[in-house]
Figure (cartoon, rainbow, N blue to C red):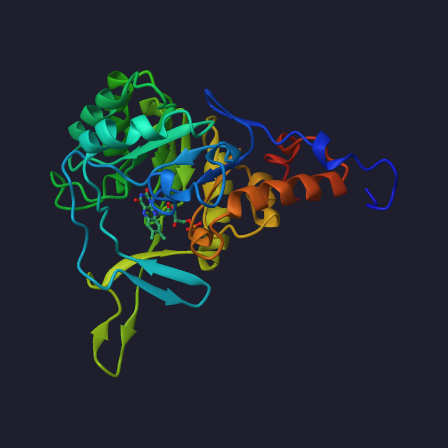
Length: 316
Ligand SMILES: Cc1cc2nc3c(=O)[nH]c(=O)nc-3n(C[C@H](O)[C@H](O)[C@H](O)COP(=O)(O)O)c2cc1C
């Protein structure tokens, strides 16, 4: 529609709400795990209830110190990280953080990672039924100690079993977060769906590295790390499109989102919601800014609902 016409709907009549499986989100914008702390750190920048969902950084059973320094390197349009999931452990979160966080977000998703498949189920049962917890996101990009240190998320059979374990441990909605470092991400998504996942989110970071040829030193303490930011958006879009054609459960798109146009591109390619990550380091109040911009762009095009854009890409 021509933005100049009087038929253009008002910004406040645009419905941004979406449904990610059992989770009702007031808008499609979630924080991406690891880029918004445990949620409370973002409160100086925006009211957590303005996000469709807050996803906390990965929690593990035992406390972790994280990886050796340096942990971050900037690359053209991207960020390489090798943080190593530092956290004080799930029990500390449940006892010390959750009571302060519960009720602040309109939807709170807890991201968990185990060191073996059984540990995911153990973590899920600890969180099951806790006030303020609305859903789980499974970070299956971390190394599987049982499986020769390969990430769980590379093997569809392992993913099927892991998600099945979590499904039998909790009634909470499950979002399985997929790694892009595989040859067939749709096969892994299908395994998650068959295991009982309510949704999949993708992508986690792409493996990458940086090196200083003058000093002969790698940029990251672990040499290899994960690439995020605008540089990965085309890869993420392609994977979201492939996965959304292969599974019936909702897909949450992640990767390089900095603008409302980016958000709508992910929705058009098949995502039901998105997560906003690296852009938080430049714009910590990105979520409310993107929400306002989404309403404006949709109104300009005469759209009344963000849901109309989901999967609207036409090929041929
Ligand atoms: C510094 C940093 C830390 C991250 N930590 C986690 C984490 O703890 N758990 C997780 O599942 N993903 C983690 N991620 C991956 C992001 O959630 C996201 O999948 C990825 O960065 C791609 O999105 P983006 O390009 O919008 O950042 C981290 C990313 C960054 C940049």
